[in-house]
Amino acid sequence: MLVAEPVTRAQRRQIPKAQGACDKEWEKLLKRNTWDPYSVAEWKFVANEAKDNNTKVHVAKIFEICVVKGAELDDSDIRKIYKGRAVLDGSWVKDENYDVALF
Image (cartoon, rainbow, N blue to C red):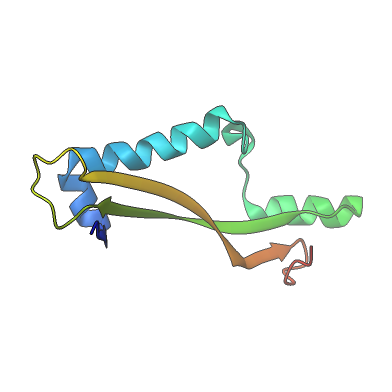
């Protein structure tokens, strides 16, 4: 049986394969144009501009998960792999008024 075991940030910094798996996930999302990293701005400015222009905007939290699949296997086993994921925290999505977003 393959066990997926969480990898902490501290562990990730010490395990190149774990950090590489997380970096690969972020690169994949950037290549898909999931967001524009060059248009990042302070939320208070974005929210104020949206209110001034009477437009709807949303802010959300994204967090990173890293696991080692096959944690019970020997380090030399090719089935032991690290997976990184960037996850949108759907319970924390707000609009320009800081109200919970409704979709």
